[in-house]
Length: 349
Ligand code: GDP
Ligand code: MN
Image (tube, rainbow, N blue to C red; front, side, top):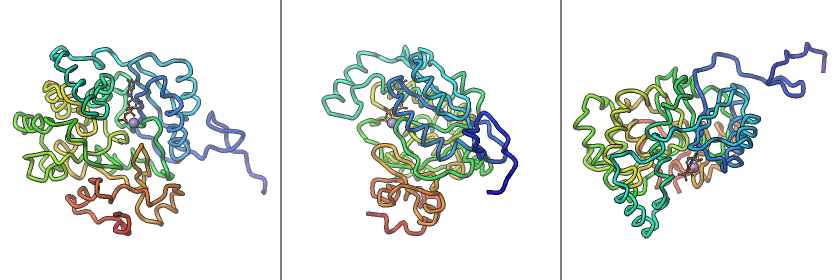
């Protein structure tokens, strides 16, 4: 090679190689992960993939949240893997416990009954605290308050393709507030009265319902009943100011009071999805075809061979869940009048 001036060194320069940081502005954004200390090796894998596929060029911060103090191993490993700043927050008791209006005996009977019926996580108290926290509190933790955008990352996920533009900037430039890569039907047994609660909210807070909403994604009968479609919230890129808005907070408060996080097993996925579907305009929700993702047991592998080659994807297109019968993504395209990517028919079964 001909001699060239050495690249400027920076903290991110490894062994004299330039970090190839992307040009351009940075958004006021962070990754966010809720995790236990015992999740360290699973979250380490996720971070490594997010860094390799995207963040080593953008160096966004990463906020870690836990209902217990993080231990040194967790902090040391994650700090070494993340190219941006890492921050560690312990969740206050009030955001991870039974509110005083919950009848704990009633909640316990529900868990016993759900355990007997073998409903996934039906017997778990901590899973319910987790779902309520992700539904109502993660976005207003002190460490999160300084950011406008978040990207949620869970342990043991995979990113199969390069992300070579900034999804936060894409969201801002296109006036998006919420996004997804996978959608599916919720287990009906975990949310039997969720839609009743939602209907009550729609009656008491008509001012919060968006004109051009996505009710048709959530209901097949004009809002009478829930079809159980939801965006899978273990992946989310979204706007924190929306979650902190009176509309979303009134929605969460209203659902929380009805008790279904404890008397049933409402997940944060249907809660976020119904909120996005009713409080946002259709155009404010984005489907990221080009962010290839896995969380057990589902894969989103981009439809379209050229996209997969351009982005150096390593997912098997046969694993793509989007156009299968149990996915709601086809419905999302239909209610928005969007054209499905070329080649989708071949992936339907
Ligand atoms: P699943 O994806 O629905 O099977 O649930 P996960 O077990 O992946 O939990 C969802 C997220 O919450 C993950 O990021 C977990 O690390 C986190 N999580 C679950 N339970 C707890 C808990 O009791 N404490 C903490 N700190 N994090 C939890
Ligand atoms: Mn998970």
